[in-house]
Image 1 (tube, helix red, strand yellow):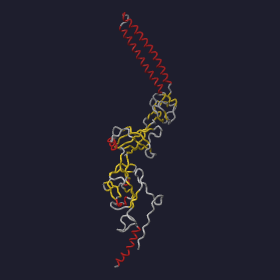
Image 2: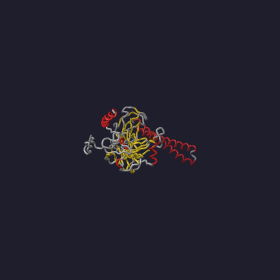
Image 3: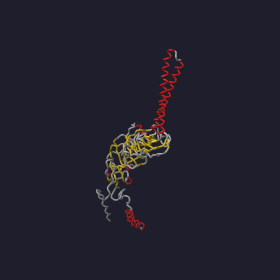
Length: 399
C-alpha cells in the first residue's frame, strides 16, 4: 500500500521535471513542442532557365614576354626609357657606342668601290680580247683566264656588298629597340657598362594589350566538352582575387593537344582584352566556363537535400502538412541552388528544421519568400518590422 502511495505522490514531480526539460510524456502532444507539430521552414521549388558552369583557378600570363639582349658588343651610352614605361614596337630602349661599326661601314664601302673598279677592268679586258679572237691575235686560253678573272672580281664584289650589309646592321643593332609593344621592366644595365652579344639581359618586355589566363581542366571535364563539341571561341568569364563574381569576359582560344598523365588534366587558355592595363601577368584569377546550353530545370536550395542510406532525398510538405520523402537525382549547383529531377515546381520543400521533420508525421510549415533565383530569404526575426507576431503562450492546464 505504501509503494502505491509513493508512486502516486511522485507522478506530479516527474511531470514537472519533464515539462521543465521541454518534454512531454508519451501521448501528450506528438513529436513537437508545446502547441502541436514541430515548426519547419519551407520554400517552393522553382523552375527557371539555367546554364551549367565549370569553375577553375588560373594564372595570368602575357602573350609576349621578351628578354631584351644586345645583338652587338659594346659600351652602353644611354638608357632611352623609364623603368616600367609602356612602349611601342620600335621605340628606342638602349644606345650602344656605334663608332666602330660606322668605321666598318666606311671601310666596306671603300672596298666595294675598289672591287667595282677591278670588275669593270676585267670586263673591259675580256670584251677587247674577244674581238681579237677572230684574227687569232689572242689564244683561247687567255680568253678563259680573263673570264675567270671577271667572275672572281664579281664574286669579291658580292662578298664586299654582304659585308657592308652586315656593317650597317651592326650600326642599327647598336640602337636597341623594343621588339614588341608592352611594358618594360627595370634596366639591368646602366650607361658605361660593357655588354656582349646576348649577355646580359638588358630588360624584360611584356605585352599589355591582351592577357592570357591559363588553367588546368580535369579529364572528366575535357571529355564533357568534347562530347558537347565546344568550339574554341567559348565565352569565358573571369574574376580576380579581390573581385566579387566574374566581371570580365573573354574567349577560350587554346586547348592543349594532350593530357598530362601525371595529373590527368589538360591545359587550356582564355584570352582577355587588357587595353586598360588592369591585368598584370602572374596574378591569380578565377575563371568560369559555360558547361551546357541554357535549359529549363527545377531548382531547390542545396541545403534541402539530404541522404537516406544510399540515395538523395528532399522532404516535401504534402497535404495536411504531412512530411513526404522524395528521392531526387541532383544535378548542377548554381548559386547555391541545386538542379534536381524528381520534384515539381511549386512543391514545398523543407529547407530548415530537417531534424525536426519525420516522414509521415505532421509539421507546422513556415513558407519563406524567395528571390529571383529561387533562393529562400531569411525569415524575419520576431519583433522586426514586418515580422509575424509571436504565438501566445499555451494556457496552463486546469487543476
